[in-house]
Image 1 (cartoon, one colour):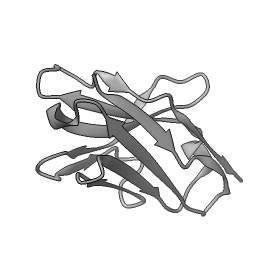
Image 2: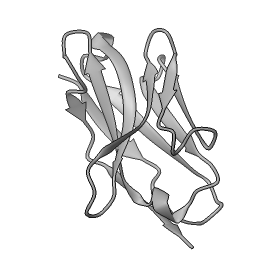
Image 3: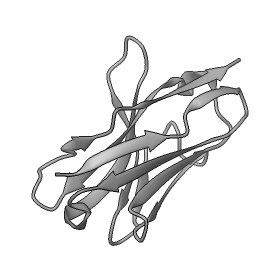
Image 4: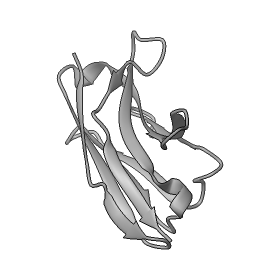
Length: 119
């Protein structure tokens, strides 16, 4: 059973930067993809970025491309999201998620970390 714990959220002014981290434990050998999602108040959860655990290939939502960077450290079982040039519309609860070799979609989720960008 994979467990995920996020850290690094907070309050930042528009144009600033934050770095989120996600630590995975328990069955990490089975993880194929790790990703970041976010959910703003009154909105549905949306995909932000993903990375292949073995390949390192990355995908981004258009809204964050060229501003956010996802990376992984397999030795430490962590995935990070560097967020630059933050905008008020980036305000949301950010969730780390994992898809394993046997799951059809992202099946494991962290508890979420709040990111608030003030204008």
